[in-house]
Image (cartoon, rainbow, N blue to C red):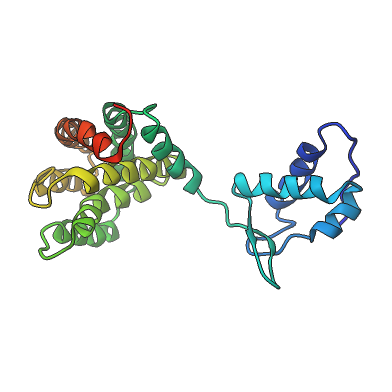
Length: 242
């Protein structure tokens, strides 16, 4: 595979652009090893330092993972929405995102998810949703397990919506919600009633978009009121700015 030589100005940027284009076009597949620094140096006709800078930039952007050892090198990653997940958490930790804003956004996103899920609902949609509801009543789970089961209905509905962007945004918001609850909510304290999820599920499986969105909004508003009160405790425990 031949790459075009680049001029001295913006060298690393130009190399990143060409390598990224090669990855996005499928010329390099997920898990495939990129050409070595020496090979890239020869093809781009630049120094190894510049090539190394470009590879590190690709790693930061999530396009490659650098491994060490005899079989080391830069390997193409399978692109995902993980960086979005980390971005929301970083914004919250830097006090650029509040729990109130998190809940407001979840209401906007998940009411639409509930509507879309209602439109997509099929008979085969019922068993996994019912199983998730049943799991919420399970006892003996660790705190993290309890939180995971409480979020499962939301994950399933996001997947049912058929919109991958909404699903990615929602998943990032779920992660942040779970992080706050895991850190500060007492195990014995219920953040919301199981019936709230059951109401949403009934409306979705009944293919009633309006009722599903309304039930989701009521649920998130109730839960959000409790969660907002936990933010100060979370930030104090984590040593974050209030």
